[in-house]
Image: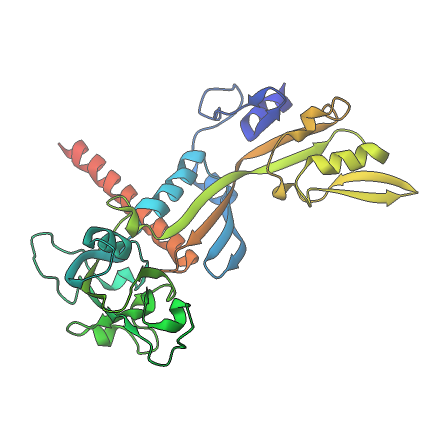
Amino acid sequence: MAETVQEMRSRVLLQEYGVRNVHSTDFPGNYPGYDDSWDLHRFEKNFRVDVIRMEDDVLEFDMVGIDAALANAFRRILLAEVPTMAVEKVFVYKNTSIIQDEILAHRLGLIPIRADPRLFEYRNSEEADGTEIDTLQFELDVRCSRNPKASKDSSDPNELYLDHKVYTSHMKWLPQGNQTDLFPDTDPPRPVQTDILIAQLRPGQEIHVVMHCVKGIGKDHAKFSPVATASYRLLPEITLLCPIEGEQAERLQRCFSPGVIAVDNVKDKKVARVQNARMDTCSREIFRHDDLKNLVKMARVRDHFIFSVESTGILPPDTLLKEAIKVLMGKCRRFLDELDTNSMD
């Protein structure tokens, strides 16, 4: 009975016709003999964060010893509450391209801007013009012309025309006030990628706009979201209930994602073993094989979350995680202040 209760508390079971133990049951008084009251020292002992992989703008880490509600809070904060800088206003001085002004402004707004939002304040909506402490300005001024050196027989636009493709590399930063002191010459504010195509022009067509970038959060508009994706999943756990050999071992290997099951030669016999359950996608393909489905137990560890965070390039993913923690701490402080205020009333 104790083993069954412990399994219900710590594992989500994947079965042929459903999933068991999907709801948290470790709350005080649910099981006699289990002290499930929250304890700070026990939480500090069990909680940990393990960084698994960090490459460029991608971060994979494990967060162990927390509830799904807290894991989801981090995910939602990363998506919608970590501030960034993005184009908010577009002043169109000339646009003779085939792209309408509104579509052009929308495309410019979705370009990620590499500028540290922690150096800026939120812009006051009552102010018509921004200041150096709350606004970044960029200018886009491109005019298409014919290439006098192009071959007469050529039909390639890249050879016939000059500046016929408008890229983010054409965006020029216009420093305001003391902004040149905030950013070094080696790392000025700029689009994250220089080869994002904005528009295509033909000779005589021109785009001249000035953009105002402000600080905001993804809750207000998706263009402020600092991540391309932020997701988590529970750690898979695969247990072989008995030795699986020969042809069954090879079929078992094919039922799972590559790298999950390994087949070793032991005394001229092919024997299956679990190599890396972390790589499994939990497809439950194993349940299509009647002779194998009762030999394997599939589960997920309830308090072990595998996070994957891909930054848009505005800030490194590890910095985004730190900022998400600060946002969550601020929420907790405000909640405690509200409790103190209500208790005093």
